[in-house]
Each structure stands twice: as structure tokens, then as C-alpha cells.
Image (tube, rainbow, N blue to C red; front, side):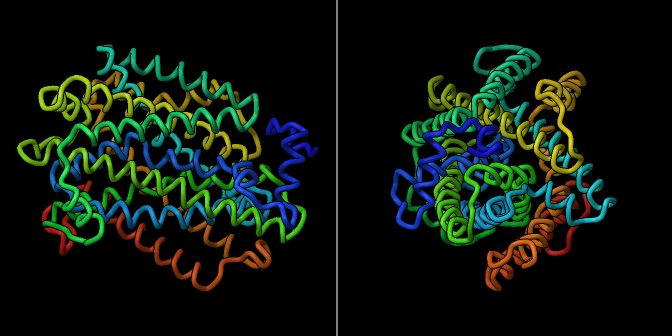
Length: 436
């Protein structure tokens, strides 16, 4: 058993099973499940409270017409999560570690600074989301919801000491809670499925305002910390001794990415469909989480509103856990040291505490945090492209011409849309988009 496997909490039996699965004739459904987990954990970034806020606004104001944006964003997310996983599998190092090794020191420190700011912005959205849900569901002050969220998050993080599988099962369970909540919501809300299918398959933008919302949805979809995290989750999970084993691991990983992010995409679509069915006709002004909750009570009853909050709490807690894990990985990878998880958790809570102490609107703060993430996003995207394109690093697993073209195009699209999003947020008129 390797040191890395001991650190991951693997048993001798698990190690033997992984070795058998990587053998030339070891492929089976059971063996594939041995490698499942990294993409599931990373996928929570695509169902965090920031997505709740953006999708509620999209559905209530524009009905089903922006569902196609989620579909496009999900394809881009699949591509970059697959590349991140590939970097970890092939090199045995995560994106932050590889950046420290191959980029100049000023670039590394700049990347670390930007990534730490992004980690705090990520945690602001996720931590506030869970706190808002708890405060509304149990009629608590927002600060009390924050305390409870912090305690629950720390408790889940403690499970990491027992190995990767308990943590993955907890995160998977919370994701299942979010998904099940939206299945229940869709059974309660009156949905025009024909219009929903049309909105998901036919690109349309009903006005300049819809374009602004679409830009926000795309710009906040691919999360910086998820790109860093996925490479770290795969780097030591099943060390491959040769290229044949690496190829097999990549196939397992790619299938998991497709499945996990397809589920995340469907949940995001369900958010928009629910908001459209519940609010678009007669309540199109609903744009905040609190307003959505209070509007659901008279429209569909307290049960529907409670299910909505349960999904929000599960999303906030799970994504906050994952965000803290990513922050630890980023710090250790870039500067070579880590701090106790409790201290890390406390430091990243500071922005949320300040927001609440100042009496600021929590949902607005959540939305603004997405702008910070948009600014930080190009850093890991470009670094990942540079590293996975290099044959001296990736060997025969360097990106092919088709993958390189798709990734460069997706990066350019996200960067441009993020620039538009930031400009509009600052009140700058963008030609062709109308008034911001």
C-alpha cells in the first residue's frame, strides 16, 4: 500500500480491488464504482446557492427561454472538469502544485492571491445560502443560521479524517437531497413541459435584459475552486503505474464527469423550470431567495416552501464543505503549507460575518460574490489549458487538436461573457446589449 493511499484512508482490500480493476481485463460496473466520487464532489459547485439566485431570476423573469444557457454551460463545465481530472491522473499532481512547478514565482503568487480571494467569495455565497435557508426554515436570525451552518460544515469536514469515501458519501447524499427536493417541487408546480423542451433546445434571448441574465448564468457556472479541486481529488486516488492504467482511469473519470455533471445540469434546469412555473405568470418580479420562499407559501403551501429551503440548505452546506476542501488544496499547492481546517473555516467565514454585521442584503451579497468569481475564473482555466496542452508534462495524454480548439473557444467565450457581466454590473453600457 502506498503512502498516498494510506493518507486517503484506503484499506488493503480497496487497494487490491483497484489494482484488479486496472488490470487489462478488470473492467466491470463494480470496478467502475471504485473510482466514482471526484466528479460527484466537484459537481456540487454547479448547484450552489449562487445558482439558486441566478436561476430563480432567469425563470421568474423569462420563463423557460433561458434553459438552453444551462445546457451550453454544462457542456463547457464537463470539458474543463474532465481536463482537471486528467491532469491529476496523468501527473499525480494537482493544478496548484503544477502551477507552482512550471510558472514563474511572481505568476504563482499572483495566482495564489487571486485564488484565495475567489475561495472567500465562493464561501461567502455558499455559507450565506445555507444560513438563509436555516433562518427562513426555522425562523432564526440570520446570524444564528450562520452559526449552525458553520458547526454543521465543520462536523462534515471532520469526516475527511476517516478517508475519502465517507466524505464522498455525505456529499453525494446532500446532492441527492437537492435533486429529490426539486423532483418534489416539479410535481407540485404546474409545468408546461412542451415549452420547457423548446427553451432547452432552441437558443433565444427575449430582449437585452435576458442577455444580461444569460451572461450572469454562464459567467458563474464554471467555478474556479472546482477546477482546482478535481485535479486534487484524482491525483492520488488510484496511482497508475503505466499508460494503459492511466488510459483506463481517464475513461472511468470521463464517464463519471458526464454522469455527475448531467445530474447537476438537470438540477439547474429544474430550478429554472420551477421558478418559471411558480412565478413567471403574475410574479415575474421575484429575484431573491427570500422573496421566492415567501411567494411559494401562499401559492403552493408551506410544504412546497419548506422543500425549497431544504434544497437550499443542503446545497449551502455541501458546497461550503467542498469550498473549504478546495481552499486547503489551493493553499498547500501554491505555497506549500496548510492551516488547521477549523482556522481555515473561520477565516473564510469572515466576509459573510461582515455582510450580516453591516445589515447588507444577503441575496445581493451572494450575487456580487459571483462577480468576484467571474474575475478570478480565467486564472485556473488558462493555467489548466497551458499545462494539459504540453506534451512534456502530459506525454501522449496531451490535449488533441480538437480538444484544444474546443477548450480555447470555451475559455474565450467565458472570458468575454465575464467581461460583459462585470461591465454591466459596474453600470457601463455595452454596445448591442442595451442599457445595463
